[in-house]
Length: 171
Image (tube, rainbow, N blue to C red; front, top):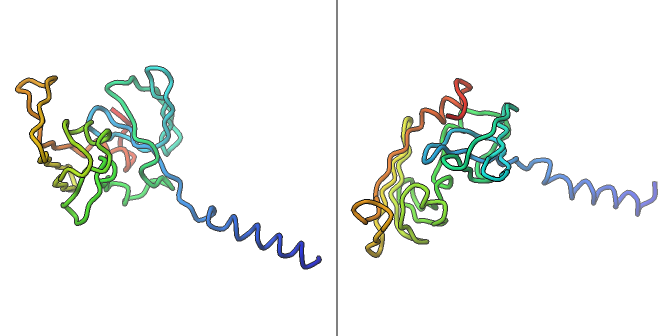
């Protein structure tokens, strides 16, 4: 083998090496505000075609179902996947609980009225997630009775945990 061919092969292997170690990212399926599955989604009209990490497929109606694309590591179902984390809600955190809204479009699925960089307190417990939002400016939500943005939400993790542990499927 000549030197040029050898260098070409080494360069090609070096190019592929980072991809070989890359982790595949999965989508998270939500039923309204509740995360219920980890897998891959495809939009088809008013439906979501869903294939979970175990290979089971289903179709869900939009709404109440929706998904967030490419958010969670999906290289096998692991105990670590039980933690959902703030990124799945459109948040970036400086500390474990001190967060800001990084994706207002995503965050407003859970609490309305948020703008980029608004402050949110995020707490993930074994059985639930709690988020408290304090808007920098008062927000009037004319769609909701009472008019003001809901500043706190609690999301139950049981459907998510059951799915990850193989005890259930999406609601």
